[in-house]
Amino acid sequence: MRSVIDILDLSVEELDELVACANDIIANPEKYAHKCAGKKLATLFFEPSTRTRLSFEAAMYELGGNVLSMSDAKSSSAAKGESVADTAKTISCYADIIAMRHPKEGAPLVASMNATVPVINAGDGGHNHPTQTLADLLTISREKGRFNDITVGFCGDLKFGRTVHSLISALSRYKNVKFVLISPEELKLPSYVKKDIIQKNNLEYVQTTDLESVMPELDILYMTRVQRERFFNEEDYLRLKDSYILTPEKLETAKKDLCVMHPLPRVNEISVAVDDDPRACYFKQVLNGKFMRMALILKLLEVK
Ligand code: NCD
Image 1: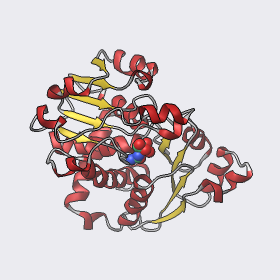
Image 2: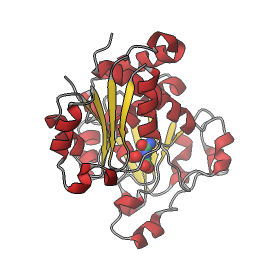
Image 3: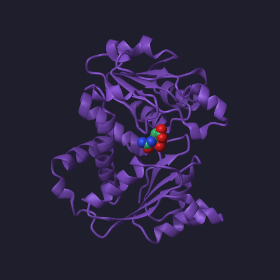
Image 4: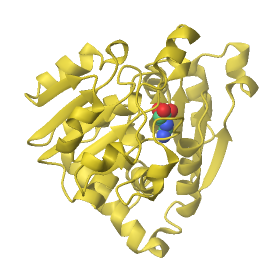
């Protein structure tokens, strides 16, 4: 039995297999329509979510399975003080696989150590978000056709943005990947990601506060929302929230085949006028996320 807590729990070969499986699901959905008949996915979300929870649930339904859903921590026994470990043991009695989002870093790991079914980390605090990375990787694969030889700009809240940490981890295993880290001083990438992931893999990176000066060199621009819920005070959030706003004018110096990504939800970081630009890929990411979650559920349930 395997869980996916960190994107590095999956090897590069397994990522390739998941991408291939998702592409096959896209091409032949009917082949997969009953693969999970009789199986149940439990979605345990202790933090708000639209895309991640609903795409997990849509994924399970499209595989012919069923879903048990807990979308509000306040209505669960967590509100009575139940531990994550006990919740995981309990849900294992009802479901074949669990997707869990939690505001505490490490909570899905604790769940996986206590569950008797696979646990998928659907986002833990400001730490990791491996299944968003699966959505991102399928998008990069379909848009650019490669993971090697790319310059990827990450812009916005690189400190608390868990999707950034997981995507950097995933891409750090490929060749000739260059990271351009664009953020305000206060929201720079945590040093553990920089040291343990980027530097350890000898990858090239630059840090800057200025998006416009680096725009022409990027193959991918990954915009992020300033993570209000992780701030200690509202004043800092208000000061930093509109640090970067991508507009059609700012894209004028970008490559013609740039891929603009965003895990969503967007607040102000990308003007809606950018949505019509063929380089805008963020709604494709949403759809790709469902297919990759289907591929992951099949893998962890060991469905052939
Ligand atoms: C992200 C998250 O929850 O970390 N959303 C998502 O799952 N697509 C990004 C965010 O909330 O900013």
